[in-house]
Image (cartoon, each protein chain N blue to C red):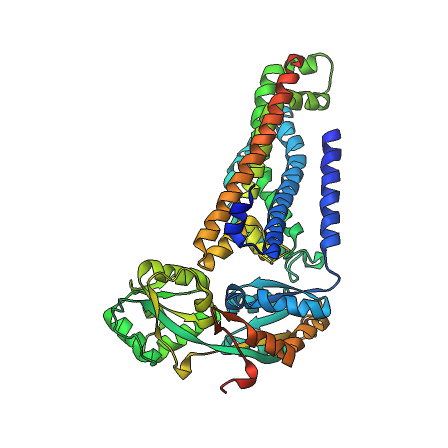
Length: 275
Length: 235
């Protein structure tokens, strides 16, 4: 039947397109949503590709999901930002090396009306206590991302257990990425914790303003993690190492530090990191 | 398409335009491939279910119709686990590739096309079945004739399958990973732009998606309409 022959030809053609578009060297980088959504990777990856002809395919997920993707063997390299779950990943023997490549900070943003009267301060814990006392709306990522983990740590310091928070009407777990959380906070006049990179490049702020910044507890560090060859023999670890090494090289560090949105630097190279 | 909406979408940057065209061609290519594959599977199955009586046929028909509403995100998740390197098909290294997206969309389109083909075949078989086998032809020989009789319904079935695949986001974002330049489709781009707070860009791209999918469907429908009129005296 001619129909089936046509279909077969189409399938073969598609397969050929796939084969020809497959780069000789490409890796899957499981990364956090913030390095993708902030535009950092779109900016620095072409600079890396120009030097090495290695294509870095970015799958942007929250840190928790990215680590899981790597655990299952579906990523070649990780770029994530949650020290606690990263340490757990290393302890399980999935990672071989873990290096910090950049840092910036988390901030608490909220409606410009600022019902909890926390604007201009730097004490994130006191701010969360004020928000909880007033039962002002607060948006949580709720997606096991690095930002979500940082938020829950702060709540714990502020004397609020995650289980108790989830029963509160004013605490809104949206189960989504940073951008979705900011969209939700903007729509609901709620407070939320965000990384500075996503905030600066976000285009739907509405009436949201920066309420709290400059707390040392709000440090946000980004690490590149290479995988353990004993557990992940199927991954392209040698190619992944080339990219990881570039990120920490002076070349890569310069590219990270040079990325700006509206004249503001989004990520600081790790060389001048506060320890 | 004029240049104006493109510049609203991406500014005058040539590489952005390149990205944009790449996204559109990937979307269309993946959906067409999935629709073609699903059609190849669904035509014989849908017709066979109408003309060959066997035990359990009713149950299969009910199941296929039930899978009409298969949630894309569930299909995506199951396929994700199957294609994962630690899953049963992991050695194929297909996760986060366009091929994985074609597989997901094919699975989504098969129940729709099969059910619509079956429904039309059943009607045609009830009406012409006796004549078709009375000439001494086997039921197998009747298959192409049944397909010929219902070709107008086939167009609807295939278009319904294409509509399902091109507009779907839940499955392709899971198994494709929304990788820029590799597995980023129109729907996953819209999801990404929304998450970056670029709501007007997302809406503009949404309009493009609607426009493209309507034009393709209208074109196929019009072409099929011409074929239908041309061959009408055969039946």
